[in-house]
View 1 (tube, rainbow, N blue to C red):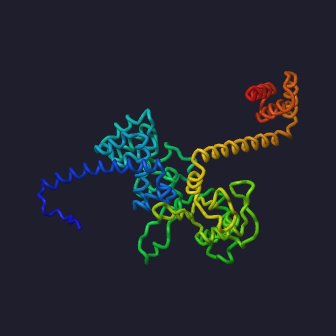
View 2 (spheres, rainbow, N blue to C red):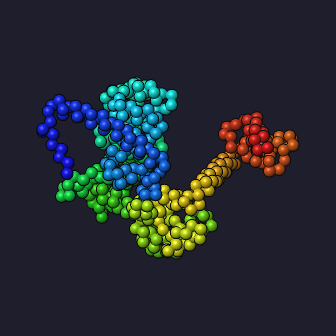
View 3 (cartoon, rainbow, N blue to C red):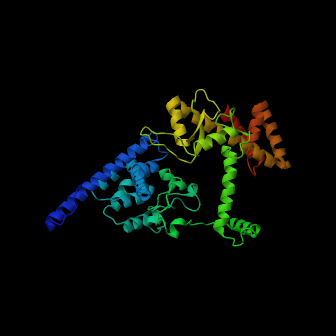
Length: 418
């Protein structure tokens, strides 16, 4: 066992060794980030049985949640901008400054930002970014740095809205359930109660809570929101489990699989769900079972001869389901299938939009009269049958348009189709 006592060292030797060790640490840390970036890019955590890079860092590498957040963000930024690793190794940048810079870096400003942040303290980097991007400086610290998302949700976030010290959950493939609660002692009441904040709701949600408190006033006189939330969540969980996984009373209702022509009986899904414990069953090459409970899908044990039976099915998280499909059918085949599915989805959405627009304008006699005039104009130009009707349908989607605008749109659509 190594002895870390340094009481025997002279002052000058202690200071010299400390300086040398810090230089070594910076170089080693830059190398760690480079390795993390490459492991992330190759997705090597998937065959090891981990559903995301974050889970791999916390469970396999034993990082804290905060350390995993920051290192993954810095590693991904450094893979795109290698200058960050050089600056880190030479001590001009620290981990926090890289995390602050990461959301704002692009090929045009990277060198300028890195140069401006060199040897700067965290508060100074905040000030530089505030001046350059007019970002809102937010409070730092563990709670701020671990904020999973803004109130509006991940889709509303942008680099200018998000503090550089914060790392959004989607940047590290993190789902809210993977953020472990801090343990403060097994016998403390605080250890049994976790804060759920910020809990900001719209006025209509608040009204629903008040109404539900009134409905349950006999069985829940205190109206305690925590008890109310527990009851509501129990009912919602039961409803979703019945609808999605067939974990209700074992009815014979059937559910579609990924193939629209195949169905899995509810009693089979119920049995598979209970057998696998509602967790991903993928076991990595190192013997680690994924155990993720997020984005679960029913996967066929033999994908080439799919059997909708308890023995022929298993639970897999989406990451490992896709990984297994690529392993069996090949990456190129699966990419082609995904692209076909994406195009088909876009076509369905476009068709629904046209049908919705048609339904909205069907009751407008002025629009209908214009569409008839569009059809007459198209036929007069020699455009017949389905081609004329499709072009007129496109013209129908225009809102508050003149007849000339609709004819122009119809002709443009016809020209693109031809």
